[in-house]
Structures are given as C-alpha cells and as structure tokens.
Image (cartoon, rainbow, N blue to C red; front, side, top):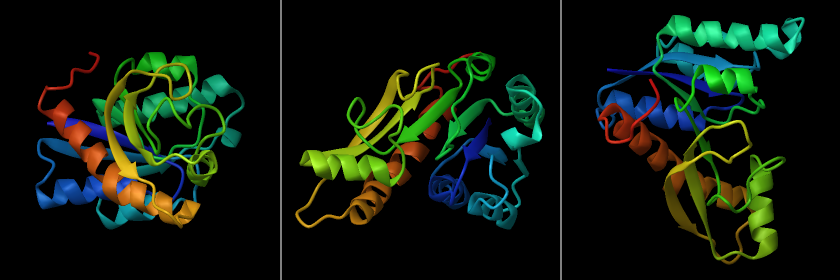
Length: 201
C-alpha cells in the first residue's frame, strides 16, 4: 500500500481528484494518510475532514526559525507514515533540507507543459495568463519530481490541452484541470503504487 501525504494551500481540487480516484477504485493500492496545509482556511482541509483523512495546518509564522518550520513539516509527514509527498497547489518554497529529507519522494503538479510557463512567479491563474499572452496553441499540465529548484525536477508525465479562441485565463485554467491535472496526478500516483515509476528509498 502506497501511503501519501498531500500538501495544499488552497481549494484542493487536485486533492479531490485523488480522493475521488481512491474512493471509486480507479486508483488502487494507495491511501492518503495526511493532508497538510500552510493556511488554516484552506478548503482542502475541509475536504480532508469530510473524507476522514487526518489533516494538519503548519504555518511558517508560528515558528521562530525556518529550520523549526522545516522540522515541524518533516516530523508531521514522517509520523503519518507517508511514502510519497504530493504537492497539489502548495504555494510554499521548499527548503533544501525538506527536499533532501524526502529525496525523489516528492512530486508536484504544475499547470503547464514544463519548461514553458514555470519557475518563480508562475502559479495559479498567472500560468494561464502567460500562456494566453504568448499566444500558444497548446498548453497542459506536468507532474515532476521535486528538486531544490522551482519546477526544475525530472519530468514524470505530461498531458497536452488545446487552447481555444476566446479562452480567458479562468476558462483555460478549468480546462487544464479537467482534461489534464485531474487525470495526470492519479495516473502518476498509480504508476508509483504499481512500482512502474521508481521513487527514492
């Protein structure tokens, strides 16, 4: 059984996609053992509660030093017994210490076809605004391993999504979620659960 901790900052739509996949039996051999947020009002925490998933809010401002904050997050994840850390809209820059604690056991979903529209400052609607501004005809989503850079880790899987005439950032964001993100993330987790995508020890 692959045990996963999902880290989120907001609404948790990708978290919901994983919950739905597990509960429907489409995603097998996987259990969500923790939902961790940096924001107490994140709707993702409500989603976790509604589905009986343990959850915790760990805020940076509640700790004296960045090292203390790192330790609190690392300890919470280790205590949950998670094998894999899934970043699903977690808007916190992870430290080298955190990344090394779970080397090649952290994956992230990003709403573009990396290396396009990624890196510092590219998150949420900003990604889709940039794609439309550039005039690309195809965008999509990427799941990748997390390293010490921003969206620079090895790519695991991508899915393309058509950009249509008249798209707004909001419309494009929704299409990328529905056609790419909500399918990709469960698919990658299934690949890891099945041993087809190797992760660190």
